[in-house]
Amino acid sequence: MAEEYILTRDIIQDHSERMLNIKKYYPYFKLTDGAFSQFAGGRYEQLDMGYILMAVLRFFIEENNFREKDVTYEEYKSFVHDIYRRDFMLAIDSEEEAELSAYIFDKIKNDGRPFSYSYFDPADKKQKTVRMKLIDSRIKDDVICYYITSDAIEFYLDTKEIKDESSISVAQVLLSKMIAASNFRGGIEVIKRINSEVGRLKARKNEVLNILSYDVFEGARAYEEFVNTGMRWFEDEQKLFVRNMELVREAAKRVESLGDRDAENTDTSSEIFYLEAELKKAITKHSELLAACTDLQIKADEIISGAKFSKLRRSFNFKDALRTMMNKGDSQMLESMIIPILNLNTKKQFSLTSIDRLLMAKPASDEKGEKVKENATAVTYIYEDEVEEQRISSNYVTLIKILLDKLSGCQVGEGFDLRSFNEHLSTIFEGVYKNGDYYSMLVHMCQKKSYDIDEVAKDTDTFFEAELKEAAKGMSELAFSLTFDDDDKVSLEGIFEISNIYFQRVA
Image (cartoon, rainbow, N blue to C red):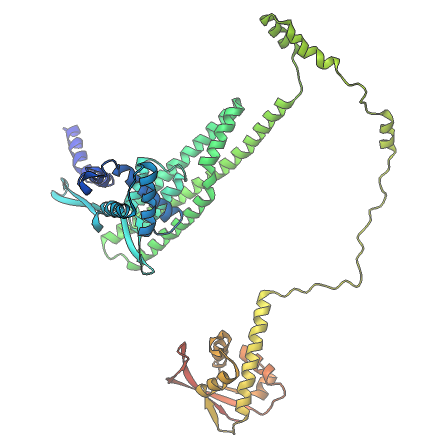
């Protein structure tokens, strides 16, 4: 009875999950079932919708995820037009190609609707509907762009891993889409797939090292294949790990901002926590794999270099040669042994007198030092921040001098407002309103409500007063106050609005 209970429970509880797993295959079989039999009187039945679909999905993965750009309809159309000519040798005019491409695209998009099918959930005792899309769209810069969905990527990966790119990178692309869609449970499964691939690469690394230990030629081929299919993508994989970790943390912040309002938020928070923990483990394992592969590179270089040296080493086993000649009964092989010995060039010898000259040669007793010229001028470096500070200071001093000159022309108790000052500036400088230093000068100036030139000359409290002191050299007995009117807004050529300021000379 217990076994029967377990069997029944597994059938009921697992049915819904199995139906959800089937959904990624459903659009493929729906699209390939008589795809071209009803279109244009069956003229294009030679085309294989399954092949075209897989090619289009691979094209979208390349553009969306590897090149990180959306696809326009014109780009899709150019891609499938090449398929007609290259793979099916289809000779049709441009108008027919456009009509055929539109038909295929509408089929893959399912006319903008998701592919759906219903199933009975025995656990909830009701009919449920599963929906998925292969290609979705969005508007970007007033242009309709298309992108592949995470379900379509998962379907493509289940059929065959992409060998041109790292399977770890592709799995991380799928992970980022699942995080964006808040499918954290599915993301955990993707991380497990990544860990499985990391484990496979570690095992393959040990296999390559083992092959190198007994067969250098076969091991070198295995090592080259391992480098091309596994090691060349490490840098891109590390970047994707960092990006996905940022996405997980952003998702965690969003859930934290909502608080524990209901059980669903609590479950989501726990899933994100588990996902982050698994991703950290994956990053650690990937770093260990990188260290193991670096060790493999060092050992492989040593083994291959040693094998090259042993092959080039001059040695000859006379016993093996004699045994070979006796087995073959061929004395002609003696020729290859004797002739090199008879042709030795004994005239090229190293003279013994050269040894005496080498022993008697004395090195220079002193090392000549470098002469340093006394009149050498020191190089002065000017850094970028110093250039910026000089520019800001120069602009501040110029603007403040104009302000002080205008105040000097006023009687005590008289003044002018910011609007009048702006008009005066515009007659002196063209484009002054586009100079950021002018606005920052106003901000610094508004830190106080009054300034006295004589007091500022004695002591400067702020950055503005230091520039005011520089601009007011040769001036004295001048003081002015600032009155702010928040209700009166001064418009600067429609670019900005600033509260009006009234400058009044008080001394």
